[in-house]
Image 1 (cartoon, rainbow, N blue to C red):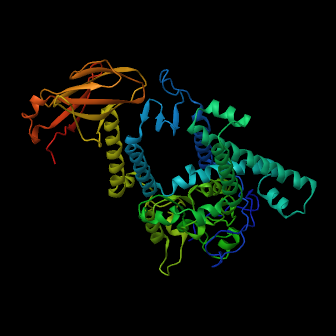
Image 2 (cartoon, rainbow, N blue to C red):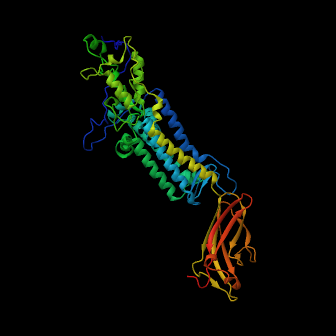
Image 3 (cartoon, rainbow, N blue to C red):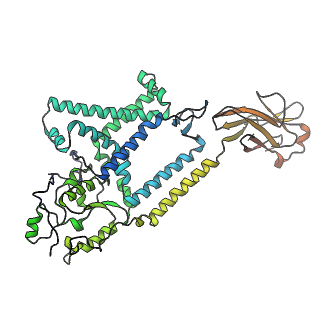
Length: 527
């Protein structure tokens, strides 16, 4: 007995669309052909709202971050996020990264990579569908396009219409706004590399460096072309991630899935099919899922490289199911293991799908159906990715909290290796660099240990010899000193090769930071 209660589709307002999945792998030619335009219809629902939220947050972060101020004192820039190429450092709020600390940036890239692996293994290409810059900017460009040209049917009609004043005005307005978005995108990028208010004034007055205008021009062009003209082609042909993601997925990864086990056989005339004794699924073949897809595919064809799992097809299908009085979830996030189990339940002895097999006598879904269990997210693969991601993050945090803000580097003079003075004493020269990595002036005590009897002198500092000097260092800068170490003649005989080393010590008594550098003292007779 067929338990399907067919809705009276003649009285239900289900909009049907004459649409083809123009980017489907089944229809794509083996060789390159001219791009067929995709006119996605605006979707509404919880996933579309989530995409609006992600777009608002990501674009807000990108465009507004350079304008956030952060007080670091009078000797450092007050821009919260700044890549200072001239000063060779990176500022991120209270964190300052110097060139020799680039491993922090490398660590963040490693975290980003494993974070992408983790998200993909758990929920498929969620990055592609929601947060990828290509997706975000395409969504933004589509907002402009719909505002000026209308929704899908109006855009198709306009595209097919002959050129007129109205069409020319709409197309010119759309592309002009797209170009302005591209300019804003390139402009926002350069603000990360210099003081934003100052650079903006210089750009507007023509006083900025040529590289600023070149960068804006390049990013304007790429944003306009990728987001406005190429769109889905970037994801299909240029991006490597669709081809890599297969290694990240397994049978327990959540992906957008058309549930054949309840949707097939699909029909537009359910009552007639049931009256004829045919088996009928929930899919009414309205193509709502096709017309909202920004990639131009039909999710009912199964998993496809082109699918970015934006889930707009879920919103579209849920809306149709609400109208015809069927349960939501004909298209849903599902794992391959759950899908295969439900398909096995729905197949009859002849292998054909019979949707009555997944329902009980009351017409409700049987308890034998498998549904997503969030516990499958915490499986060995995702736990491994999460563990590596956490270890790298904790390691970076510990290194950040324990790092010294004072560094000492010593370079022995290469020519001459030593100087023999008239009284028989031996003098060695060194270039000592004190790196003060905080935006405050401070006094560093530079002293020497080892090499008994030796004294040092710092050129340009207080006159006289000694074994310890208080040296003022500039904030957030390297202070370079010329240091001479002299060993008297009567102390030479007491120094053998093992004792010919000395240690330079830089110490800040206020912060208790202490750096040691092992140096070598050259004397006559050494090889």
